[in-house]
Amino acid sequence: MKIIGQFRNENQRFVWLRGFRDMASRAQQLTDFYGGPVWKAHREVANTTMIDSDNVLLLHPASPRSGFSLADKRLGVGATATRKDLIVATIYYFDAPVDADFVEFFEGTLEPAVTNSGASVLACFVTEHSENTFPALRVREGENVFVWFARFHDSAAYEQHVAALDQSPRWRNELLKELARLLKRVPEILKLSPTSRSLL
Image (cartoon, rainbow, N blue to C red; front, top):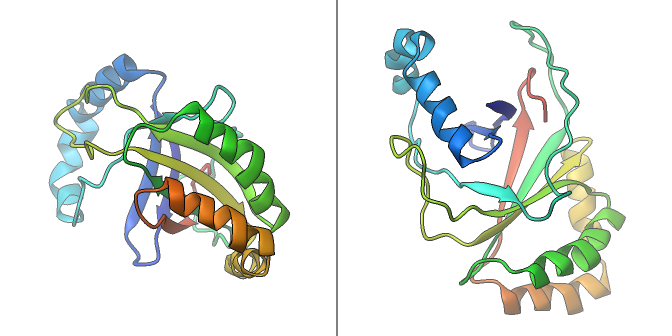
C-alpha cells in the first residue's frame, strides 16, 4: 500500500491517507499487514490511542488525471522537522453519486477560481461504491462525496485565500449559489498539518 500522508487536524487528532492499486490489492495488502508480525506486536498499544477508527471514506480519483502526484521522498525514521505547510481537504456531499457533469464543473470553473485566489489544487476524488473488500476495517457507507485537496504555504496563506474568495463577487454571487443548489449540505473542510515524514 502507499502511505500518502499523515496529519494532525485542528483538534490534534490523527488523520491519514493510504492508497491501493485497486480493490483486490487493498484486500490482499490489508490482510497481509493486519495478519503480519508488526501489527501483532504493536496492536494493543496502537488500539489504545484510537478514539475513532470508523470515520473512513473509500475514494477513487474523480478523473484519470486527478489523483495525487507524489515525489517518493520521505524523511528518515525519527525525523522531527516542523512543517509549516497546510493541506486542506474540502468534502462536498451529494444526494446521488457524483456525475461527470460536476467533475467537469469543478475542473473547468471552480478549480480556476480557487487557484486564482491562492490555492494549489493537488487532487480530486469521488466515492468508491465497491463493496468493502476488507470488512474488518469499517468504512462510511451510503455516502456520495467529492473531495478535493489543496496545499498552502502556511495557515496565513490559507486565510488569505479565504479572504480573497470572500471578496470575489463571482464567487459570492454565482459559484457559491450554484454549489448550494447542487450540494446536500454545507461542505466539510479539514485543515490538516502534515507530520515530518508525510509524503503529502
